[in-house]
Length: 486
Image: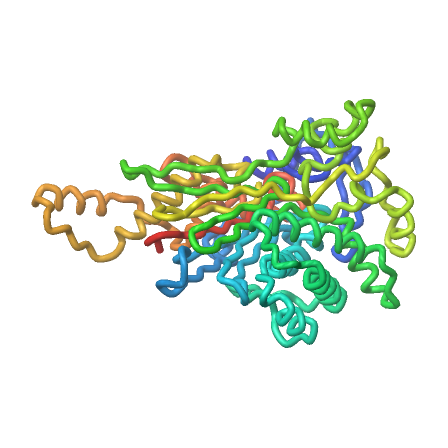
């Protein structure tokens, strides 16, 4: 019960959580409104009386880990992507992470995204449903823009073909979301003069426009109270986002927040090398820290970032939603007066908003001739694994999976070389998971060298919901394979 005792002594929110409380309290949550009430101070020096938690069997642990697995393979010749797999493991209840994968219907682009929500899952859910549409709309060629706009307006078609079993629930705000997208397309039809934007600019515009629409929708009064509440909940919760857009041999990463994209490339010596394609937008990034501080007067130099958080509260320095860090105080008050749940106070030292932006940092990578893969993951994974270790695990897993099939030696190999290869296959570690995203999650929870600490793993996945969220974060992983890798 080592993990349980350790988790019970953690303060109500650890450094991994997005929002920092003002007091050390235990909290009782309501699933429908995410409200909480202070209960009693936690004494970290008091002995913890842990309840008896039955130890899970290995099969039960594996069932939990593999519950949300996804794997999709593409037909040969369909593009640079051969296949991808994904998985999620919850810490919060409900899980605040989301993932999406899609194919642009009117271009040959592929989109993959991971979204790390905070203050509830609402914003991450909405972003996972809508962002790919905005990106697809922004990259439409001018000669098809007008015809596509008419089809979208009439509901005749969609901009994105969803992959990987993405089955989005019917939102109360489906009509609101559709009207915002149609308006966006109409503005593009009216403003475009056959000047094709660069992909990086298109990704930036799509991120910024969707975030703007979230805030606008929260300020637009509807006759339906439920719609108003949902729009407000979306705008006042938040989400980080990392999106990969692939077209031909071009890979673009658009990142806002602290999810991460890491490329694994095989070197000439057969070793796997990581290439980090995104930067964490938090207070540990000096460039990001200077960017945020430079946007406000010098006399706010000591208050904009406090205790490594924006205004002492928010860990990521870029994110969707989070209206508390973007809208003027008067505007926030007007919106929240219509929301009969509770009043959300302004952050301390809130003088010159906005303090937060959803503008992504975009990087480009040429995939031509490369053998490798891309890992997209929320910070729940990166809290436990560094890029080098994660890339090594994926590469080793791919090689081990290949050794589980029939062996056909090359014609030029000697008998000794064949014997050596067979011996290596015989003693190689057989993966417990065929889905490499699950393999990464399993290792992040309990990996030790080339083995797994089963007791640690069983305890980790057995912790009650009100405890586990203080011990680790939600984890979402998507691994995309390129160039001859399956």
